[in-house]
Structure formats: structure tokens, C-alpha cells
Amino acid sequence: SGNPVAIATGSSGQVLTSGGAGAAPSFAAASGGVNTPYFEAYIPSDQTLTDAVSTLMNYTSERHDSAGAFNTTSKRFIPQTAGKYYVYFSQSFNAVSTDKFHSVYVYIKLNGSIVTSSYLDNYDNYTLLVYPSSGSAIVTMNGSSDYIELWAYFNVFSGNGKAVSGEYSTFGAYKLIE
Image (cartoon, rainbow, N blue to C red):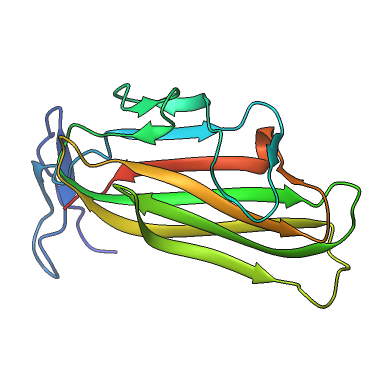
């Protein structure tokens, strides 16, 4: 109802904004930023984990890497842009044929120090064969030498377990817009 308001046409890079009740909308420059650099990596084939030993996870294949900042040899993300990063993982573990799963810790590490971890203890139950683990953290990085890695500690009743590969393994990070 009422008379429609005529507005000017915006230009490239502008968004339509409200002027509030009774005021005509107008175009303004878009605000915000970009979530780069970012990466997402995965384990290309199942990784055997020695029982009760902390192990650097074998993320050697990439799904995405906007700035070439994930090193598949060192398995480290070393962004060259300072800021806050959302870091995440999702990793499944398998007790293989032992069917005696005790516990698993998964650690996001910054420069070798634990930032956050995920933990499951199934010590007296033994019924769990596969465990999907996930976690995340916001990490401040200096944009020159800081790095993040993903580590795990896997404990089974006997023998070794494995980190499941492909779509069951994801490790990534992206810069937050501040």
C-alpha cells in the first residue's frame, strides 16, 4: 500500500541498506573482509597408530589451500597473515580387530603446545570399535612463524589402532574477519 519509493541504482561493490522507518533505502559500500587464508586437509590412507604413543597425524593431502600455507610434508599450517583463526578437526579412530578400545586424545597444537583437545575414555567397557572425534578452537597466529598441527594419543587393549582416512579425516582452519 502507499506510494513505492524510487531509489537510485547502486554500483559494483555496493549493498542496499535500510534508512529505517519512513526513510528511503540507499546504497553503501559493502563492509567486512575475507576469510583467507584457509586450508582443509585429509589423511589419504589409514594411518597406523602405535598403542599409547602421541603421534603427529598424517594429513598429507589437501582439499583446499587458498595460500599454499599448509605444508603436506611437515603437516603444519603456517599462515603468513596475522589474526585469529578458527581451527577444526573431525577424525575417526578404529581399534582394528582387537575390539578393545581404551581411550583416545586428539590435540590441536600451536607451536608444539596443546591449545585444546578432545578425549574419550572407554577403559572398562571395551565395546567401542570405532570412535569419531571432533573439536575446534580459535587461535591467534602471528602471520610469520606460528604453526598449528593435529596430534593423537590412541590406546587399545592390545596391538595398534588406526586413524581412518578419506572422508573420515578432516583438519582445517580459516582466518576470521575482525
